[in-house]
Image (cartoon, rainbow, N blue to C red; front, side, top):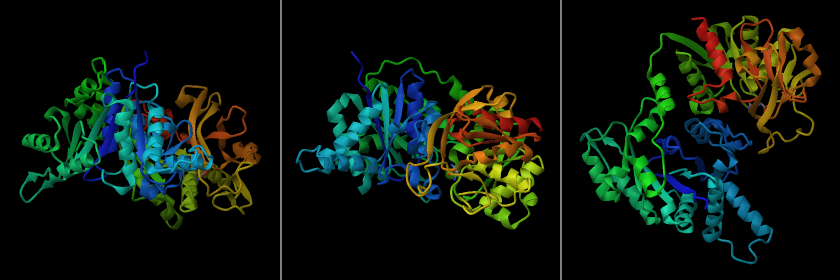
Length: 533
Ligand code: GLN
């Protein structure tokens, strides 16, 4: 008989932003280390259908799955902590479920019934959750927001009902709370956590496990107090003080009893945990290295690092695995437009031009790429960064009006443009080239050298492409297309010809990078920079 999937639900209370996503991902990590197959899913209360139309400045990076779903950045943490590619089923926003229920109603599938939040919407949510968990030993579901938010009520009700639908013995509820420290009385306060658990109980869910976040490790009596007032056994309470690196969190949780509590309560047969590879990641993250590289990130969102979360993580991992410290220097692309580019890039061993949308800062990015080409400054272009590189090469070669349709549709030389059939969809959701596409690498190229492969598969999220009308001019501009789609119709990678390290991809390699396995595009770049030290 097939074993039933076991569900672990992760809710949050007191405050948002205390690391519920990292906690969910870390639980996944330590369960997977015990030989279990694990999936993770984020339920977000936004009425958006997906994260594709959300502003990254407020919401952080839009993470893309291999099957092309545009999702919340927490999925990036999930993939990195699980070392596993997820699919669109791992991301569920309210808008998607509402759309489905309303479409079903219009199609007459409810056969005259009143369509209601309970049971119809909550059943639809459960269907999505159960389908996402299909085939896995454990399915971990994080509910976005904090308990008691008006917006997330239907998700909370859905996971309560799910305990009845699949059996309470197959479900476990983890509640992540925050314990404030009061400077005046030098005390860790548990009242907000107690209130939050009461709120959750009021909604019909008694947590099986509490994860208590705090700045510092609280005194032991705090656990007893939490246990008494929240009705959770002391060994099912995990203290999680601030960590110096997020990668430590799985190891901190491993040192508590909660993995045992989960596996016992869900009756899961497990092996001894194998966390060797992960301990190596943490060790490297804590080591101070003798070499250091400084990488300039030429970008437009300077005030929120979450916007480039996966890029940042990929660079960091590559540095750690090359025994190198890394300093990221944020270079405001808009400022390059009004200032001396050489001055602004001073001190950078290499630059990265990450992905982006819209016209702001594009001229600055093109100028930076022109400078990198002319001055042999190492360059890594990611999606938009490739498009800027092609324009830069064209302009350096004398096509002074070269541009992208995104910036100037009337430009004389649109070296980057839309493909046939894409016109007029610039502001709509889900219409870009999204998810996995195959790419062939040219023999003898830098791309082939860093990948040590001839064929690769990478994830995309963009609308514009290299204009094939200009491809036969590339060599005269000092660049070449060293990665193309198998039919040779789409340019996937550009590199400099007479340049020590100039490499750009139309795809987003950062999504496939792992803390324990840096992506070749980032590894190659950092390896080159570190080799010069
Ligand atoms: N704005 C560009 C495009 O749509 C690049 C997108 C990106 O960097 N993700 O093609």
